Image (cartoon, rainbow, N blue to C red):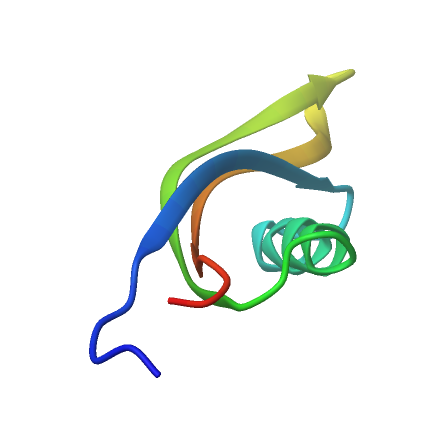
Length: 71
């Protein structure tokens, strides 16, 4: 077993018609289906889509950190 870990970060954008928190949860839930050992996330940008003067969707850009296998 190694005495150190090596990580990788990816950037994704989650969206939701409900809230920015829900957009984060949607992105993490979707990524967790294919990315193992996710350890943290960082919100780097929040924006939204406007429809008829109202919020259509919240869009949140995340950096997700995960540990590489066997590290």
